[in-house]
Image (cartoon, rainbow, N blue to C red; front, top):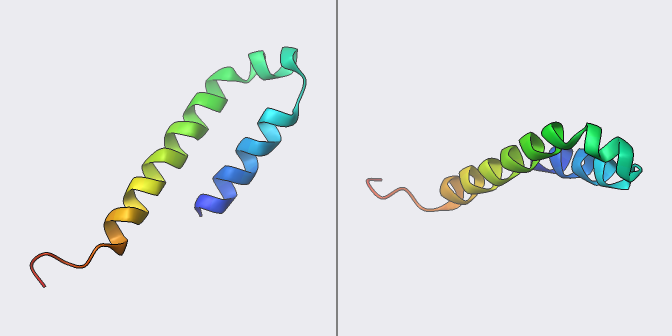
Length: 51
């Protein structure tokens, strides 16, 4: 799932500057989502503390 967001983010970064400015809000949301998914993935990979 993280790969999908990172790939989409790469596509957003590849468009022209004018277009990217128009999509800046989407860019921020996608970056935030990718960061949150990375945090979640890291937490899920940690051994269960109470297990």
